[in-house]
Image (cartoon, rainbow, N blue to C red; front, side, top):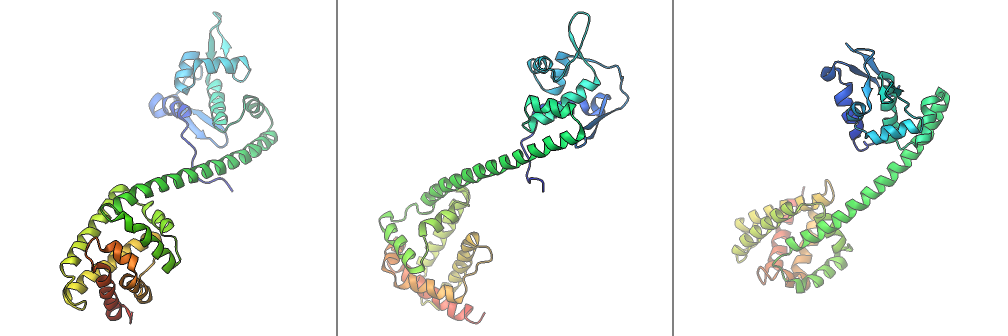
Length: 303
């Protein structure tokens, strides 16, 4: 099975292809099947067309020095004019394009020479061997990419954590974290990193602003009975907001009746949680827990 995912763009070959091989631009070359290395067919071209070393360098996107080196090692031997200058024809252009492809596949000069000058069976063996090397390299690169993404997510999570808890009493946060870890048998730090690491700074700010606005609205009605319409309308919004947040951690996750009962009881009875949310109001956590429990009993129990 062929490796999945693309490799970096080949700028040198891209320049060659766009400038020299597209007959719509140059009216000289037309690209054929790359996989078979049957690369060009004439299209309104002069079969005697030749290139100087500087022209081929410019069209192929390789340096003159590289072409000189290919000449010296016998990989791409040009004709020599009477004045000694190098001269390349269409066959040289085809061979150079093949060399560029093999170089991008990480073949050595010696291996490329064997490939270009060997039989089909030998080519298959060399290509098969190189394919294994490329697959292994792809795995290594993917591992490095995964590592970079984990690091980026960790950094983003820490930045977003500061945004999300800005203004809240940090001295109570440690006890709040411990209570969550003990009550729900989860890692508050790990869960928070997973959640916040997947958000941008802008998304985190928007989420915090939404939560702060809701908290302000709830404090304004906190004196009302939990069963009042004003309180329950706000709790419905809160429930939807919590479902969206937990859904970012686990797709299709829903705060059902049993989960809400457990969480609301935690809010209403846990002292560390009450101390943490006392920033908004001294009875904030207790009243939120009671109101959410009422919502569960009357809206979620029979769903």
